[in-house]
Image (cartoon, rainbow, N blue to C red):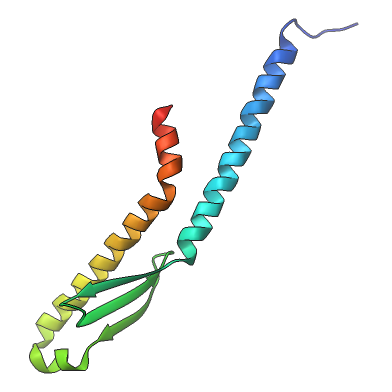
Length: 111
């Protein structure tokens, strides 16, 4: 005896299609995440007097302060320049993230 309801095959097909779409989207997002994490971003302050490098994961890996900067500015100003470079790096990371994920976000916004 067949206990399936009419139209169940169509429903199963639709569900299978949706699950495949989710799988493909998840793979695509994972690829984008890996791309972002592999990036290295540089933030700047004071016309390059202070630079910071961070990975796409948000981890800072380097801070460079031009040696002349120590002679030109007091400690508070150097600290402000470092914070400015860090914030610039984070802003650049955010922009890179927006750029990489834009196709997915645009598709989601259309739905």
